[in-house]
Image (cartoon, rainbow, N blue to C red; front, side):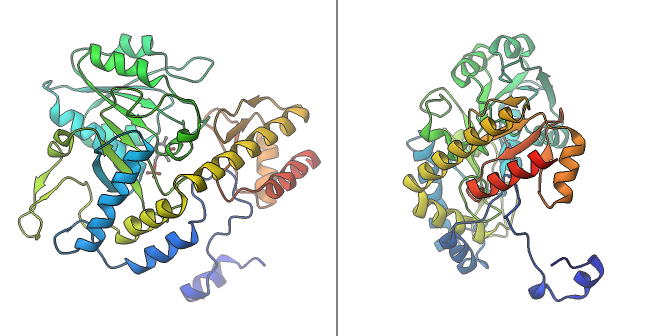
Length: 362
Ligand SMILES: *Cc1c(COP(=O)(O)O)cnc(C)c1O
């Protein structure tokens, strides 16, 4: 049943309906794992931003970072549970800027980077140098090298791009970073929870990566907000730390002050329940669904970008997308207009069958 905006505004919040996921196809959020939702509730009022006053949630956070290290091939990871990929990316740029010797530092990244890098560049007053990607939609290290110079503080690669699920050649980008003596950041905000089950080279063990973004609140099935900022060396966190005179703890490397204990506890429970087998199943189901959907859309005559990860982009006309939205499908286009379906854990084959039938009818 649909309720009009006016009636909705008068209803107390507990009687409002939150988003159902039955027709959500383009979002990178999903339903949290039930145990994660419960754990989040339990730690609602804890503040991991002040670990001395709130030691229980601080301990959970240390364990989350250790497990994220396991996922990303890093033995003794540094880092913290951030508000999301945006904050993790911004912090990577901030650390690189603070550690750079140049007064006019720049960041070199492919055009496929998430828009959060524009925010980071703006807030931190750093130049963002973006190079085009080729037909394969991946960064060409030669292009990165052409843009990089002695002022380059950070080279960025994406492991699972937001629009097409592409994985940049991370080890080669690490060579570029070494050549210009900059840091290397990998944005695996979305891809980090599926890539461990693939053959892609993307993690700390595969290349000289300095920092990484990996979001438990996307493929990790943790409740929002739970992002991950990881660093190989403590020096990175030191470059971010400020003194905190009126807290029990004396230093803080995070961007936000008070943080969500629910996010930390939710991420912990999600990892405990799912890593690695639950995530492997999510990946295998998501990838099979993406491959199936791509085949169906091709057989209906649409151009489809080959889904190398569980994400399908198809050239479906704008009017068809609008008609699908009118039918309740929550779908959105890429920058160049393709329809994008992200095969998140809540996206079932039945949903996709109905979707494909609706596309066919239009
Ligand atoms: C979603 C996403 C982000 C931003 O993460 P938020 O949690 O929305 O702040 C950054 N990078 C990539 C590749 C993403 O897919």
